[in-house]
Length: 178
Image 1 (cartoon, one colour):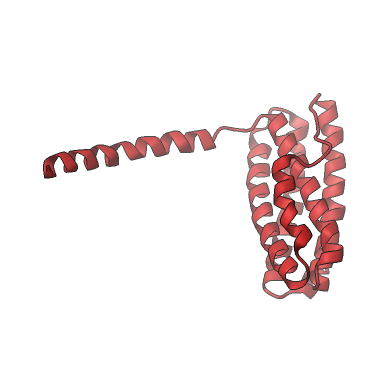
Image 2 (cartoon, one colour; image 1 turned 90 degrees about the vertical axis):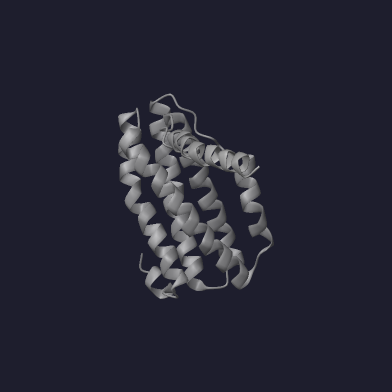
């Protein structure tokens, strides 16, 4: 019985790197330009939507100021993305998809410090993910204009991530100067 159990464990352990390779290989597949446009548009709309909510639901002035910067920047990015996508015959979503609606829903019920905390954490997670996707698109995009857009937008996304991290550290006044 011990031999059978050992053989099963050995087989499972020896196969697990193979499964891990398949999974990581799939994760490494580049997005199509349309997938990137969908991701970027959803991100821009989500950031602008949550930023608008922050104007009435956040309590800290630093969070409100940060959120207003995101509304401005992501609205501008969305418009620029629309121009580039149209030129490349790609479709830009006009509203949040169901997944992003579901992500935004809890923020409607939050107020004050609870909103501030959740919002800042979401901005750190969202901008970290966006930086990864935009970096990959800047390297792998099929369309030269989308590649340039991704490259050009990265500094803004990094500024947003740094601003959210500053808010966590209590440097709200420093983030007002962004």
